[in-house]
Image (cartoon, rainbow, N blue to C red; front, side):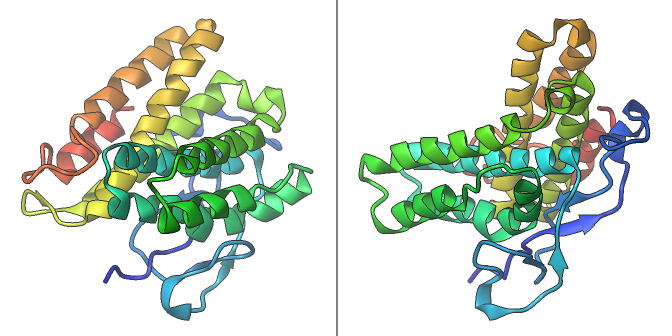
Length: 264
């Protein structure tokens, strides 16, 4: 049985994007979602909380940049779930459609409400129920797309000055990479991937980082040199994740992946 996953841990950090930000409402992120180790912290609202009925402390996010990171993590979970479902790996996909509900939405919900962004928990829950009960039905692909679109809509509801700023993309991508490196560190031991879910979480976060960079390269040409350098760094990290189901032997050690992440 899988251990109870931590819903969301918020910690204070300027992260790798510290030099990009000035003081103010959209200053450097001070609260980031961290994936490991899986403890019993529970979301403040929404979702099911931790497994086994464990109680935990309430956490929440507030600033726009923090919300964008959490929404990006949701997309990462959904991306890897989509990949696994397309391969017929339903049992492997199921935790990843649950993580946005159990680990992330509860902390994001107050920030969504404060900004007048429509709630989308029902889309995430509908998808999870579909995957649990009838994953082979054509409705699964439709509900997955609806969940992804709902997360995207929430991000697009934030002020353009924040979400369309190249520095925002850089900060979000760097945090996704840092989180992926920590997940991978929890997944690998003695040259083997021993925690499949953490490996897949890391892959999903890096794929979302690549997706955001690809979009930014089209929409933010002035920042192309920095974005291209980041894209190359994320591509190097993705070498550790050749497939959604991990290889028998780890391609890179946790230390090697962390070294690549620190270069971003």
